[in-house]
Length: 147
Image 1 (cartoon, rainbow, N blue to C red):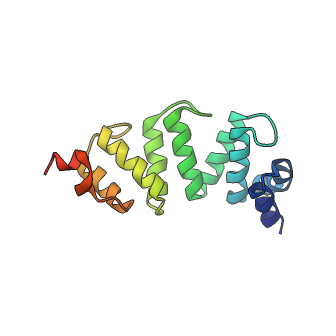
Image 2 (cartoon, helix red, strand yellow):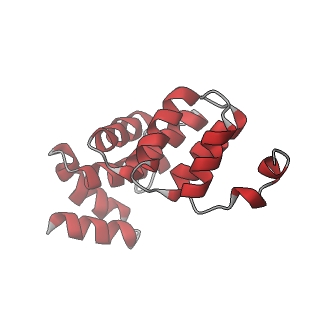
Image 3 (tube, rainbow, N blue to C red):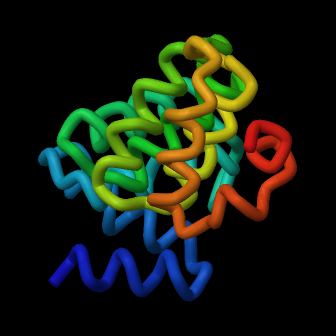
């Protein structure tokens, strides 16, 4: 019940209440609570931003296989937000989330392969990830030039 109440408070933008309800659950190992607490810490929702706590909670949820947390951790590494910028680590976390079907992670990973950012440039891998994300590579300029 507390998780449901905490998520409801989060979605209603009652962040102080959400933090109060979700933090004990996060400390108890609940990945969804950890992810929501990470978002609040990252963005200073209901208080001041806390990059260290944001990274710690995001990683805790990501390590448990929470796809959105894996995606979020990927962006932390990609942008150097809350963590030191590391495109290779970003690609690792995006791939984990992409393999769970997150189209945003699939698209970001495709762009990373297309650009050679954090991974070896591999247009065939980029094409596969774009297709998984629902794009038609035949309609994309980079692939039109290859055909």
